[in-house]
Amino acid sequence: TEDYTVSGSSISFTEAPSVVDDIFIIALVTTADLTRTINFVVDSGNQKLTTGEKGMLTLDVSGVIESWKILTDNPAGRLQVDIQKSDYNSYPNFTTITGNNYATVTDSDKGFDETLTGWNKNLVAGDILKFIVNYQVNVDRFLISFKVKLW
View 1: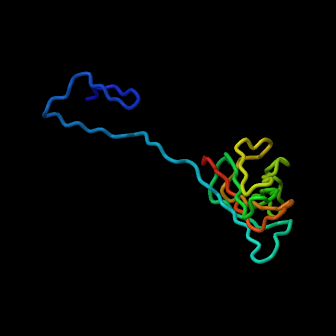
View 2 (view 1 turned 90 degrees about the horizontal axis):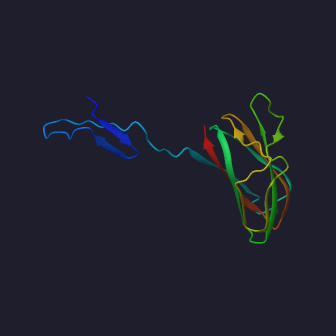
View 3 (view 1 turned 30 degrees about the horizontal axis):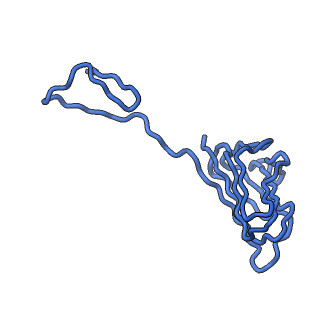
């Protein structure tokens, strides 16, 4: 029989179970980490980093971008990156997801944004992201990562 109530993390029995009663409790709710980090590394090797397209990445998860983070190799670096997206059927046609609010680092070796004003934050498994350096000063390598809340 069900002679109990649940409130938050507490179970209250209507009558106290006796010593011979068998009690089975099954947790039906769990807490799971429903975020993933998507990373893309640009490394110009022994050459100077130039502007332009730096590569593409195919996604295997669907979700909403919650933030981006950039780490560079120079504490006095400047960098601006446009991120464009296409689905498989539309490839090779891409559109920016940044709404011209590009991922930017100014006079630092890192940048972060969780506001994402103007961004198209929705990602679908199979989407292709393209990374384009609009400008850079004193940066030869960087990591850009996205925190994505899964659907």
